[in-house]
Length: 119
Image (cartoon, rainbow, N blue to C red; front, side, top):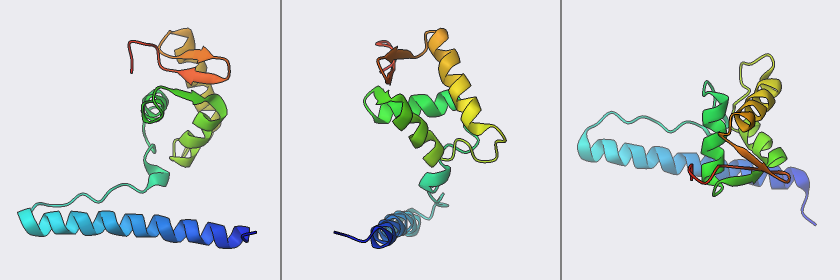
């Protein structure tokens, strides 16, 4: 059985390697075209400052328009949707519930689903 601390460290190393490859690719593009590279946002802050509904839609698109509500909330928090917010989790839940009432999102059992006209 693998040690959980070791597993966490390996995941952090792989994440760092992925970011390094992204920076190397941006540097290579810069050298080739002499453009100003914009470094990619770290995954833990990709939703920082993004409206909750826009973040929800983006995560649902990445998961083929359907995702369990708890996993959706976890993905939003992991993406930084609650960074700098005093009541971030509350705001996400309110946005989700409001957009279901408005018909912009649907609930199917425990899944949050994009309506058929949104995929």
